[in-house]
Figure 1 (cartoon, helix red, strand yellow):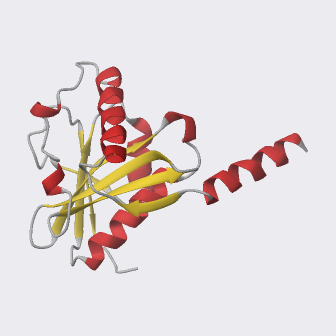
Figure 2 (tube, rainbow, N blue to C red):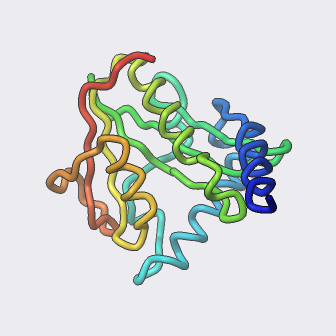
Length: 171
């Protein structure tokens, strides 16, 4: 009975999450991005310096160049994800992060689904991303969603795996 009650509570919390486009330079976005960068700094074996990575500057993450999403739970920003247009039909997933205290609620899945839907509506048919070997949860999410591992497509010094999904469909 206790397990069933906990599951109901988890499902209710998950249903309360709202995902919406946001200004990547806004305070809530900065809070999520800063938390994301701190986590990468802690988890990566060599630390993390965003200046050495592939760019994801605010001006690259707003229409028509891209999109930035925030996930909110009880009015608090608890996750983010971004889309950066990289070509006529291609884009890149950037800044995927969910606060540790709300992981397991399906927020990353919903962020990814929403990014893919927006990408398709923007006329993109290919999404790419890179990730570090320490981010096993991220790699599992991408594989589960039809991303396949591909050869290196950028010079991100922190990336160990590169993924691509083709044939995005408008939702």
